[in-house]
Image 1 (cartoon, rainbow, N blue to C red):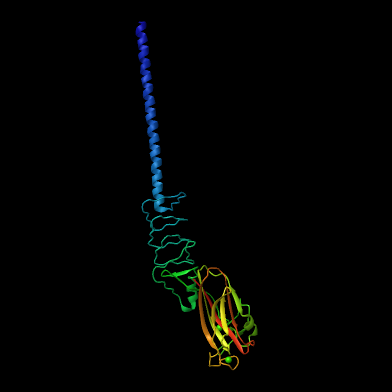
Image 2 (image 1 turned 30 degrees about the vertical axis):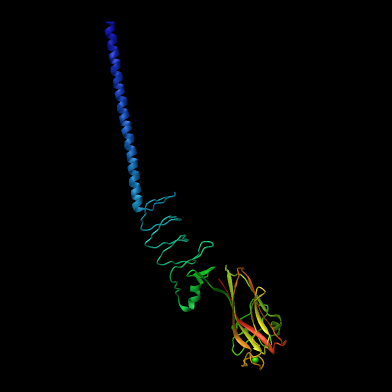
Amino acid sequence: MIVERGRDILQRKKKSNNQRYIYIYILYIVIYKTHTMIRASIALLLIVNAAYAATTQNVVLNRDVKLTKSFTAESFKASSMNVSGTLSVEGEVTASRVKAAMLTADVVETGTLSPKAGDTIIIEGDLELSGSSDKASQGVSFLEAQELVLGGTKQWRIVAHDTFNQDTKGWNVAETSTCGTSNVFLGGNCQQTIAKKGAEKIYTNLPTHSEIRLKARFHFLDKWVDGDTAYAKINDEYAWIDTPGANAGKINVCGDKHPEAGLSQLLDVVQTHNSNTVKINFGAFMSENDACKQSWGVDDVEIYVK
Ligand SMILES: [Ca+2]
Ligand SMILES: [Ca+2]
């Protein structure tokens, strides 16, 4: 009897334990499924939200984005963009600064076109400067480069042109004259100081260059005799000399009644030079001490570099 009772108790206990396990299992299933459904719902919400944002709103990315394949967009705006390959835009690109190893465009509108430090802008093809004639200087100002290279050859750039028609700025003497025309030049008949001391000017702020060119028109006025010599110096060294001789000149144009030994004789000298300043002198060794009887003048002094 006692044994049978004991069996009953054990069987009932077993039964109640099994029921407990079933309840726990059902609870587990409910919790697991609910959790999965919540996760799936959140994922779905994120996808829907992203899709909605992609189609209707701006997408702002505060991280670096690296695309290894192509990217196509109707418009694109970024604070900076680096492309190691080719960037092709069919419409318009607006940027405060564009850096490129090579840039191909139908139209480039820019205030400044500058090469990277120490490099050169190379134009492979024709260069056409448009604009009306009165605005020609504005068009040319685009070419205010340190150096100008066309077809692989460095070009002369004029950096100074003294006409003396308005002033004698930078020269150590201010004596000017005319001879036959209203064109004013430095020196001339009866200008005693320049006849004795010569003329000097130091040109500064020359752009980077390896050669310098001095051009000017020189006037030999009134009577010059054999051996009388005019000169031009670049940095205190004789760069040009000329001796018109006693038989030069048959026509009296200005000064005293003696014919002029020479007018507007062109001097054009090229030297290697790379300093950003250059000193230019003009002068003459003349047998006559009186500038009213023998004198010289200089006009259109031009300094070029390349
Ligand atoms: Ca002049
Ligand atoms: Ca004369």
